[in-house]
Image (cartoon, rainbow, N blue to C red; front, top):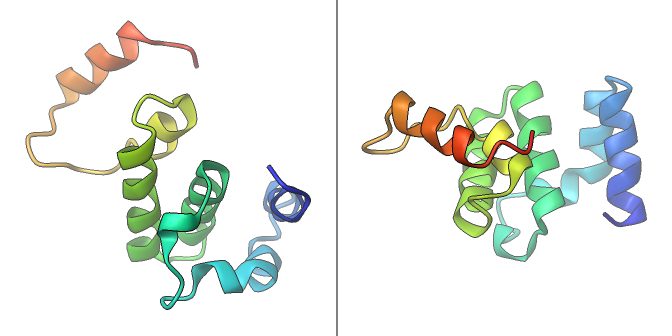
Length: 102
């Protein structure tokens, strides 16, 4: 995680969500492609958007994170609310049991 994102994470950890959003607003504009965002940026952005009521953006960022890194523990944890076609709770529980590094 770069220094800028570490600062945003620090604000998030202090529950200063709006300030974190204001400082990172350039990342979340519709004109910016999310394809260039790192995994840390996708996860933090998804969490921040969810905190501030940006459910569409949050889902979009988490879907991209799942697409790129489906087995990453952070992605599996924070994106667990996403509903996919054919999604079944039992299948999700089995996948957690197979690789339970959390």
